[in-house]
Image (cartoon, rainbow, N blue to C red; front, top):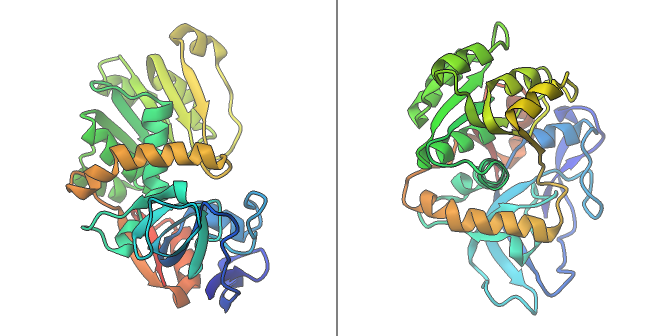
Length: 328
């Protein structure tokens, strides 16, 4: 099968499209998926650099955390799927290849309205955002949601889910153009962080001093003190990304005074059972919104699989607005 392979760790130039043996079903609950398209993520960029290896059992040389395709074979104990079913989902690695084996509990049926490339832009971003905002953050109707890096794949997914929930959504970005484009997805207020990150004052003005109920933070680092200042009483800060660093000063007094909840979360390292739980909630609560058009895939650009180096460079340039997808 054709496979995206990391020849040596360093840069996208070290990627190649090569032939590897087809995977074989290893247990009775697995299915074999013929991958038609695979989404790219910043975790893939880190894996190429050798900074984010996958969990045990997955090749560090084959990236890929999300896929869309059709079932090519099923294990003996799989009863709820059939060969030919169109499916998408998340995996801990190896999604950027023509074939993938995966536990059947991690599959979701693709709505008829979505193509494979559109579907491949969905799982990682929307499962991450839904799990963070609603399962971890317990966002309620009437609460305000703040999303950092709102123009990213997960940020745009969170924006759409927040608006579908009836929430006011505030977003930050270093790029003014991305904030303007987010308005098309319903962003209520955009805050530019190009010249500094003192956004707490603007949050206070927007919310009449109340603060926000939930923050989806895809940035980390120096944003942390401003996050605490921006949260309302009993607010919840959900840490998902650390692109701006993994350390910050922590005003514990403010956390105590406001009775804040601070939660860190990541999908990749979870057990199959934990991933299945998040996947099932996504299937029940998000996929119907995709099917009826309430929300849509945030597909920025599709690259042919033999243009993988260009695809990775484009994602790394920070020019993308939404998801970058490889098509097999």
